[in-house]
Length: 178
Image (spheres, rainbow, N blue to C red):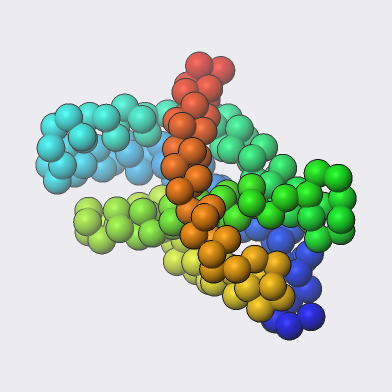
C-alpha cells in the first residue's frame, strides 16, 4: 500500500475522530452559548443571530441526541467504505467521501467562528488538531491508492449540501425527543 496508514484502519479512525470532535461540542456547547449569546447578538445582524442562537439552543442531552442521529450517517458511511474496499455488497466510497467532506468543511466553520467572534468556539480545538489533519491524511491516502480521484472528490462536493438538511433534522429531533 502506498500511504502512511493501512487504508481500512484509516477509514475506521473517522468514527473515533467524529466522537472526539462531537464530545467537545456536546460537553461545551450549552454553557458556551449561554455565556456568548450576547456576543453573537452584538457581532451579527439580528435575524441571523436569532436564527443561529435558536438552532444552537439545546440542552446537552438534546445535543447528544442530535449527535446520535448524525453518528448513524458517520458509522454507516464508514461501514460502506470498508465494504467497498472488501468488495462487499453494500460498498460505496461516494457516501463516505460526502460525509467526510462535510466534516472537513465543517471544521473550517468552527475555526472561522472562532476568528470572527475572537473567542474559542466548541469544536474549534478538535477541528484544528484532529479533523483537518485526519482529513488531509485520509484524502492523500485514498488518492495515492487510487481509491478515489480528484474528479471524484469534485463530483461528491455538491452532495455535501444534502447533509445540511440532515444536520438541521438531527437538531430538530434532539429538541423534540428530550
